[in-house]
Image (cartoon, rainbow, N blue to C red; front, side, top):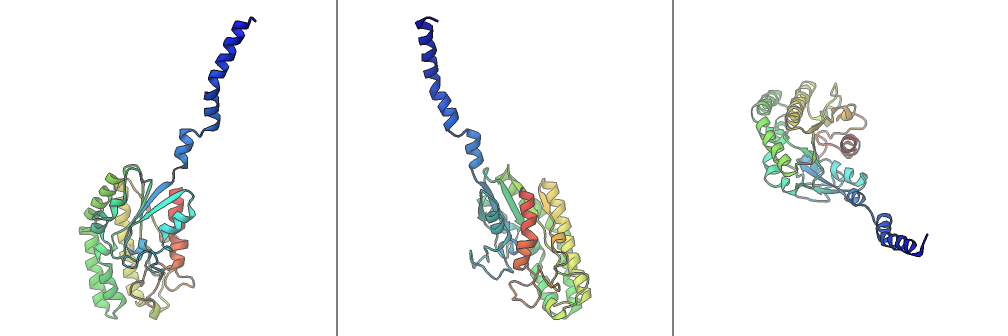
Amino acid sequence: MSARPRLRSLVAAVAALPLVLTATLLPSAAAASAAEPDQYVALGDSYAAGNGTGFPDLSLSCYRSSLAYAPLVAKARPNTTLSFKACSGAKTGDVTGGQTAALSASTDFVTVSIGGNDVGFTDLILSCFSSWDELLCRSTVSKVNARIDAELPAKLDATYADIRTRAPGAKVMVVGYPKPFGASVSCTQASGVNSRESVLLNDVAAHLDRVLAARAAAAGFTYLDPVPSFTGHDVCASTPYVWGKATGLLDIYHPTRAGYRDGFVPLVRAAMG
């Protein structure tokens, strides 16, 4: 080979060197994208905020707790950042009226626990759990069931539509409510209800969950059923996942710390992948 072709080859090799170094030493766009943390937004009411933990360390007014399921999931899941907006006492209007402002096109995951306050969970507590008047309890149960059918579906549809509009690419998980009672009520003082009332109240929870699941499916969301995880851990169990009447009014019939950690967290964590 003459000197001229060899020179041209050497020049070409030197010219290509920066490209080789760039491809070898600098991260690719895909790798850089993969390093970006997943954006997780947690919406909802007291069952998402952390009532029952006895530890509202993140927000006293909303009872947000670092022991609620969303912070525990975010802590356990690699490369995940959390925007925690759930608030005790929230209704669907509170979710759409403020909480969903945290959502964006960058949101990857959303959990939402909502609906109980819209249909009157507080009325149930006052009428059934804080009273020995079974007729009053039955009357309130009937009213709550009527609200679940007549009022809640449209409210859920509006809430889910707002979530989808604000977070078009997110995986949205609708988290249901656990049943507080087991097959029998053996701890009357702790449970606060008799065996007949416990059946009525479990039926209300099941009714509510069916509507949540149906509206979640209609919205294209994932419904997470906590009942299997909480079965065997009712208010009378040796390891309850739900508080009975013996605890304070703010925590009554809400998940215990074990309920959040061992009941809700594995459910949400598995769905997020």
